[in-house]
Image 1: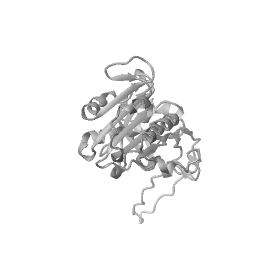
Image 2: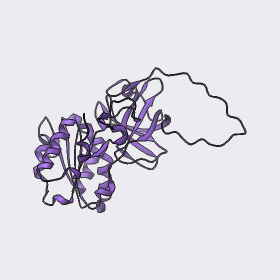
Image 3: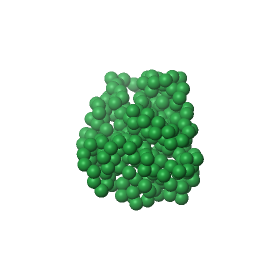
Image 4: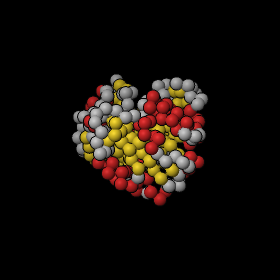
Length: 291
């Protein structure tokens, strides 16, 4: 997810380094497991609790991956990469704990520390020339935001894109400024769990609108589902009832990520570690995962 409850607090350590001899000027390979300072370019407030941080980067990344964001002597939290450019990544951060509360005190120009990038991503090769359906709920929209924007910029790569994005209410809506482009280029349905229907938002769960999609050619479909576990369960079941196979459905278990190196055990499901083997899984591959 774009934000997580697994803020890991650190007590810190005092480390001393040995001066390097002037005769050894070779450069050590960079260790991506060590946090490094990166500058905040901008901060965009989406809701009271969810802000987008655009942060500099000097590493390659891909839609669906994540980074560990930290502040010295405070702790770290795994955050999904919601989008990226040549020199930046976008991180939608939800204020849910000590680390994220401190992040919300920062300003553009300040530094955050990151390590990564970690995890796998969405299988772009499997999506080529396919009918893509993306169903996401709440902050689960963040990990697919970049994927949606990519296909809006490159519609020639797919045959069709349908999106069903659900939020609790109008105060919880993310990416309002991007929805005009999404809606103008592809089929976008936005729903609210509570409130009143408008020209933009419809009332009800995301599963209620799957029947409105044209699924008449199921062999061409690839489905991406991101959100709370209970939402994923019912959305996947609905598509399986429509005749799709488990291998046509991709799920994102990014909410389970923690340390990113498979040591803390928070993300372990059976013999798999979501932070190492995921967070994106083809649904048939999840049947052996024991939660």
